[in-house]
Image 1 (tube, rainbow over the protein chains, first blue to last red):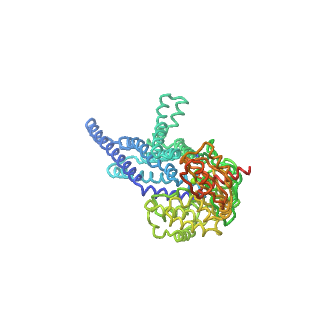
Image 2 (cartoon, helix red, strand yellow; image 1 turned 90 degrees about the vertical axis):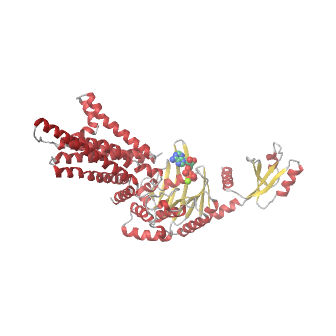
Image 3 (cartoon, rainbow over the protein chains, first blue to last red; image 1 turned 60 degrees about the horizontal axis):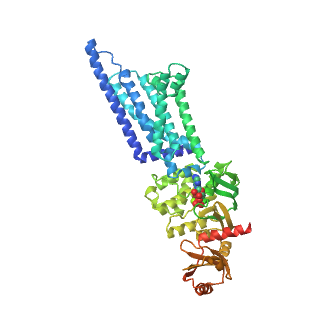
Length: 256
Length: 311
Ligand SMILES: Nc1ncnc2c1ncn2[C@@H]1O[C@H](COP(=O)(O)OP(=O)(O)O)[C@@H](O)[C@H]1O
Ligand SMILES: [Mg+2]
């Protein structure tokens, strides 16, 4: 545990002295802010139209009009942003040969993997927490159902963990950070597309299994406020699988 | 303290080290001496459990490098060929991180930091970013990293590489001061470095041990012969053989790209005047004739020939 802490502390330190985390954080927050602003403006226009039709202040559902579209767009944003956070994790250690220090110290490789993952994850959770300003501000001016907002955040947190674990795996495959980032983009987009492929195959066991593999239908349910253990298991097991693969890849490199 | 038995390491089809066997006693300082590509780094990476050997057994302090890597790693301080430094950290931050992954407690770490800072004179730069340090200081931080948890075994891969002469002397002094209390293996491709610092020298070439000897023994073996470099303007085709037929000549190396022959002769039998007369009297035109001191390459050639002669 102390070794995990040591790796974690070092990772956080390295993140904060490099500009990457600030750029990634700023880009993420800016896009999230713009997206929710656009959703709010759009909701306003719809409200005016509804008033014209019905002649009275209609029930304006912020959950449907603002949060749901924002959460869907946020999924795309984290897909684009998180691989940048993870690309250096193993690639840089190998390139700069600090990897040799880690692998000749009395710590286990899984402690290294977990420490690195947690470092990136804490950064991501921090970014996510900052976006909480948006629902907080909106709650001052209007009322909405908090439940789907919170489960939407849960969905983002779970999906982010899966993305980061995938990025960590990609970073273990190469010494080149750019290659690592593109590998994780590629992997994540492929897995995303499995959802569409599943729908094409239709509502049968094969189609459903393929859809299940995509992270998007699980996220969709969470964004709608439905918490199903099946979906939680999907994200957690996907994340564990990716971390395990990262571990195997790093370990196998010692044997070449 | 360190036992290596028949270690072989293959990268694909390429055999980087081939059935290497040696032992190092407690408190001994041993050098791996060999040219680039000899397999020094590979051997050290196996001992430090960075990678497993393809075949053979390596043991450190009684623990097997393959079966009990954590126990082995606890007892080793390792300075890789490229010091493993995080450029974005300060010296103190970096060494604190190293101490923690070496499993040091807070108290140990504090005293360890003070000790290595003093021993390696890092006090003045303790709050500087590693990226901004000179090569010499970076190397010292690398050494501090290896010494921090006060391991009984130190493995130092080319510890003086890229340093200036003053820094080289400092590092050598430091290594000498470790003898007795620590078991040290260092690698180098510089012959005088191996003989100046170590009690025993293992000479490696092309992945095989060519000789194991004390510095004194090594010097004695090398002093058995000396060499003359002869360049001839118009040499006959069989000149090498004619040289070989001369008295006192041990061996003749064919001309290098510079066109000069290298003649090896027994120690204390200076044949230069005879040689000069031999070449001039035959009218081949003497261009150059001088004694040459042995380079590391000659040492390897000699030792490999010597060993092959025994087989
Ligand atoms: N990872 C590797 N893959 C393939 N060949 C390697 C690898 N590492 C080293 N070698 C080869 O093994 C030989 C020994 O290398 P090394 O142990 O680094 O020698 P030294 O440290 O004595 O210079 C060299 O020919 C080198 O090219
Ligand atoms: Mg080397």
